Image (tube, rainbow, N blue to C red; front, side, top):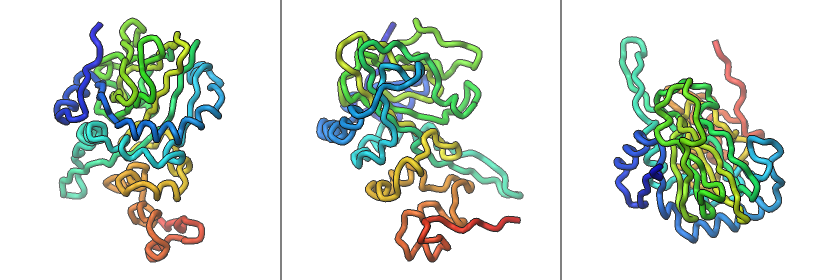
Length: 298
C-alpha cells in the first residue's frame, strides 16, 4: 500500500489543502526546526518521565500521556501557527455560513480554536490503539464538512515498528456504517521534527511498538469555534500562562468570540479577560475575581 504524501514546509498551501480534502492526511517534513524541538523536549520531557502509564486499554497501558501543554511550555507558537497547519485549518474550516437576520442575508465565518493538546509516548509492548475518528467526540455524522484539523508532531522518529500513527487515507469520505479494518491502515513514518496533519473524520490510531525505543509525539487539534473544546483550555492553562503567548495564540486558546455571538463576556469579546485591570473594569468585569457579573436576560 502506498504511503502518505509528503511535502516540504515551503509547499503551496492550496496544494496541501487539496491533498487534505482528498486523502484526509499529509506529512510535512521539517515542520519545526531542531532548536524548537530541543526546547520542547527541555520543557516537556521531565513531565513525561514523571507520569505513569495510562490506566486503561484505550489510552494504552504501555503509553504515557501529558496534557495541558500550553500551561507547561511557552514554545508552542511556531507549532500551532505553522503556516501549512494553521493555514490549512483556516482554509478548510473557516468558510462562510449563510444566514438570514430579518430580511438581511448575511454570511458568518466561524472562528477556530485549540481543542486538545497532548504528548503521547508509546513504549515497548504497547499494542495497536483501536482505529477511531476524533471528530466523533462531537457526535457528528459522516461524511460532512470538516470540524477538526489535527496534527501529530514527531518528537522522536516514527516508524512502522515503534508505533507510528496508523491512518486510513480517504476514510473521511466514508459514511458512519462502514467500519475501519486494520489492514486498511498505513503507518506514519517520519523523522523527528516532521508532522502528520489529518482531518477529524479520518480513521487513525496509535501503532504497536515492538522496539525497545519509545515513540513520542505531540498532538494538537483545532476545532470550529462553535464547538466545545475537548480539553477545557480555560481550566487547563492559567491566565498568566496564556499571557505568555501572542494574541493569535491566545485567541486560538479560546479567548475569542465566534460569530454570530458565541463566547461573550458581558457582551464583550472574551479577550477582554486578558486585558489590563482598567480595561476590564470599564467593561463591567469583576476585577477581583476575574469574572463578570451574571447577565440579566429577558
